[in-house]
Image (cartoon, rainbow, N blue to C red):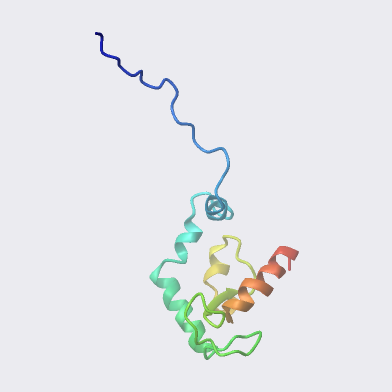
Length: 117
């Protein structure tokens, strides 16, 4: 009795046609995602710490003490007052940064950005 063999597939797997939210986010300001890399740099960590110390770990909009650990509503977030949109000089400007609570940043700040302020 002859042995059955399986045929190899003739079609290759197609790449997804829809972008994932992460892909959209990572390429929004910079196609090569260099801007996203700035947030992982030692320079950013030092600048972030300097802003939190300057603002005494206090939210500059609500006055709440920033003592939580992410994802707590009182965890500290360093926010760009004027969105940098990939502009390196504006990204690193300490005068454009402020300490805010995660709760404020995830609600009010995002609402303002969507409105275009």
